[in-house]
Length: 122
Image (cartoon, rainbow, N blue to C red; front, side, top):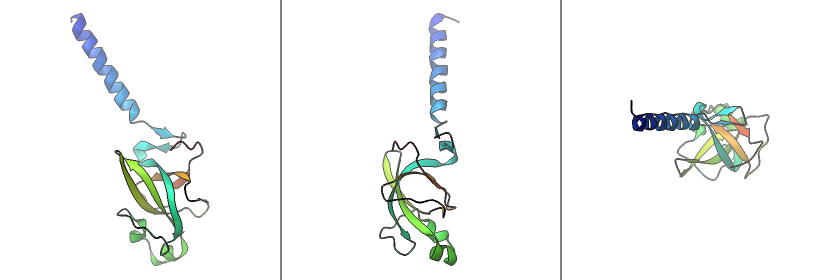
């Protein structure tokens, strides 16, 4: 194998390694990007019927009547492929959030998977 081919192979292997490392993002050592966790911001908080905005991605649509009556919901915004997206989720009962707070949200989950960002960098 000549030297140019070796360099090309080395560069290719290096690029693949960098690409794979980028997919292994873990926020604060607990919230894995590959598991669906994303950085988000709380835009609005309230009862299910009190939120003034809507979202195409809305966990209220799969909630029971009891959950709608008793849970607190939040409109979250996050960036996905350079596009601002929103999602309405049920908040975990033990946590306290404020408008504007940076959080982590697990996309595709309506089980209250929202956590505050400790090292807020969003």
